[in-house]
Length: 87
Image (cartoon, rainbow, N blue to C red; front, side):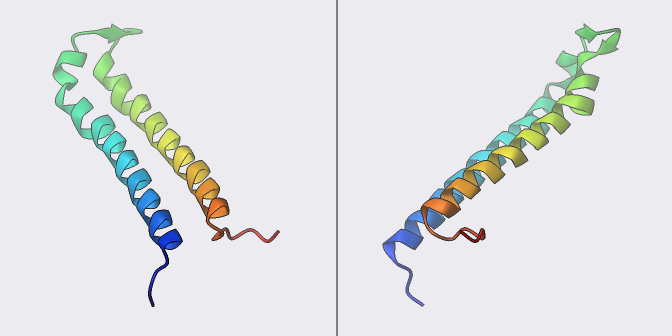
């Protein structure tokens, strides 16, 4: 099956969104972990800051990433006519 230009554009935007969110995920997970020792020199409410970054901050980051993906993909699906919603 040959893809139309419209389908290629949709797929390209999907890949750009996914790549961008994966970069944010990587930075939030691995790059922050790399600096955990430096973060632990600071404290927040008596606990090392590295604890909060990984225990709370990473979970919030993941939820925000999921929310952004859902919102943007729903908009792309409607724009390119591949939405699952019945009008």
